[in-house]
Length: 469
Image (cartoon, rainbow, N blue to C red):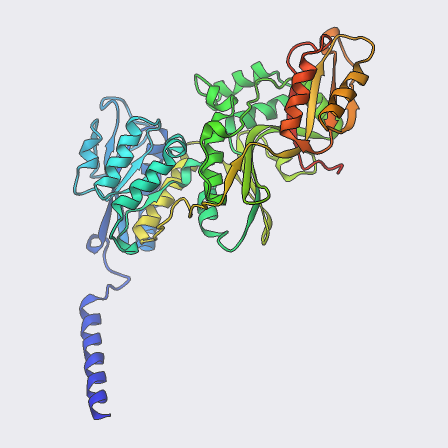
């Protein structure tokens, strides 16, 4: 007992001596703190927003992280171009990314330049050089997810979790909505049955204009371009490809499955017309471009991007303009909906800043894409109720032929609708099916399009959670 008492006293004395020499009081001046130095590659809209937020919130972030966060360098394409934001004090501009990637002073590289070529080199070289990475680049992640994951494993091989290089990408999906962090942190004990999201602001703005304001597709696209929601080439947005990249990332986080983007069925909004919105209103709902993924049987996962009919009673139906929304249906939490701004300077920059702060605080995520599920398998077939619109030239036997073709492929018809027409150009009717596989639905559409009374291609889309069933 005497030996133990002496040893305990020695330990207490040593502890007090350590505390006296190493404890940092809360009132310690900012200049005495460590600095987390940031290099930003891309000095445009988002890069400028990051600088503004970090400057505005400097004192608060220092207190939160116990470290200062300082932007030390920004890589831009044109050094002489005027900036619409104030360059932070002590920050230099460069037109060479290597000045940031090879600098021993930079701890975190923020990639907000976009694209999948130079941006890929920036991200991979930053990780190789032992720098944490924050990115808003969903196209790069969707295209190179497996490569990024493998590279992270290599650079972190042999490191403890606390010393590991971090890869954060909250802004890559839905801008300012914290959907990435939620899927990483809020569902480990849950099983996700379905993800359904309005995940492209440009198309949601356009479809709102077509529905609420009665604009044509062409007029809605012109308005979206005028307001800066659409790129000069809007194909990625209106074709559904931007939404598909985001859906791929969400599917990996939710189901542990890495799907080739080209394997995800994808249809854009180019075929939608005012007639479809007239029929949607007759059915009591509206139309949105959705990214949908759901768990099927036996470890299978399906997913698609497509315009979808949504009942007016559905929570996603009231999400308008450029707003994004993601709804997660799960076993424990039932339905959880995340709504907010999916793009823009400050929403996107806010998510990047949050990622930087997480690194400065020492938050560790050893599996940024969540663990892979080797037993999960992606399938292109899924079951749904479907909406099918056909333009026609009038003749006897149309209804009979539709019924026969649907019966041939096991498709049950729920209803047939025909709104009053205002001109010969409006000769169309709509078939709403019972739940059936998209595979059988494709066969019905293909055979119907071959009939002589069908004018032009048919338009068809899934019905999300029909309220009449």
